[in-house]
Amino acid sequence: MAASVAVSRCLRSLLIRRVMAPTPLGLSLRLCPMSSIAQDETSTAAPRDAPDYNYESLRVTEAQKHILHVQLNRPEKRNAMNKAFWREMVECFNKIAQDPDCRAVVISGAGKLFSAGIDLMDMASEILQPQDDVARTSWYLRSLISKYQETFSVIEKCPKPVIAAIHGACVGAGVDLITACDIRYCVQDAFFQVKEVDIGLAADVGTLQRLPKVIGNQSLVNELAFTCRKMMADEALGSGLVSRVFPDEVRMLDAAFALAAEISTKSPVAVQSTKINLVYSRNHSVAEGLNYMATWNMSMLQTQDIVKSVQAAVEKQELKNVTFSKL
Image 1 (tube, rainbow, N blue to C red):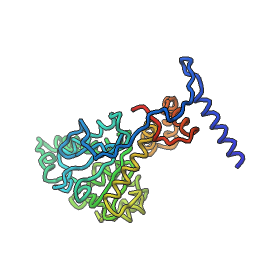
Image 2 (tube, helix red, strand yellow):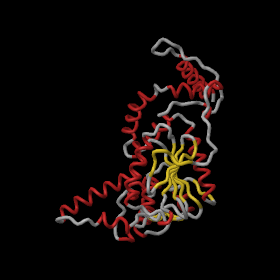
Image 3 (cartoon, one colour):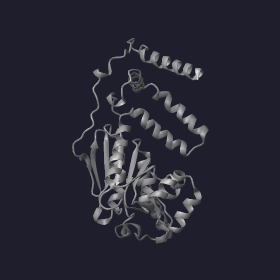
Image 4 (cartoon, rainbow, N blue to C red):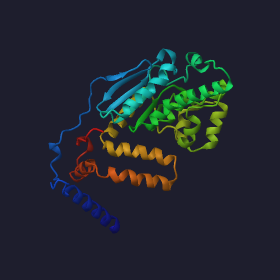
């Protein structure tokens, strides 16, 4: 215990010395009362459509300050994924990745369920394009599949944390989508179904690659993929596919937005760096992950966000009262 206290005091002393250290311009950073720093305010107004995010298959709203809500918005079609969806998801999340005002995202489905998966009727004309021969058909299909894969990989590549809020059915490509998200909540009535084998194909846009890493149980993944059986909410929670289950959609969304709001109070440099390194480390050895982290943090440790966060800790202030620069 004494050793732990000594280490804690030493670390505190080092951090405070860093806060007080001279800057390259010869100036000194002094702690000023947190009350003098402008506070981030959480909006209680009704969500409004986010400017510059106008899509046919998605609705994007500003849920709260720094938080975007992306809805699959084809409720009359059970949020089935049509040609517009596969294009617009890439456009949307590439834009979110570069949006300095956004720090967290909640993604959900409008209407009675999350998503029924791919819209086969709408997609058939694109998938079944006639080509001159087998080789050219194969090249075309490979290019098409790669394009569809990017629709969900773009969520993973986006440095902003993405929280999936799932109610009702999450079928086929819906599972591909949520496994690319960082955090998953669901309602008690939700179910998950890797449906592709039932329509004569192997899932090809992410489920077979991400689901084993999400739940860490290859036997269960094989069972779900081979049989196409439904995984209900309680099993999803027990397997680690989701981290929380709620009695209804309203409470689930409230919790998802509360989580997003908490994340948005943290340093965006710290949060986005954490996501990028978590994704990298998942796909690399421990040694490779540590080397990448060292290279990453040799620049990120120089952020003023550390100064502000330490100042808040010293003054026993909440991070929601700290103004971090946009990123």
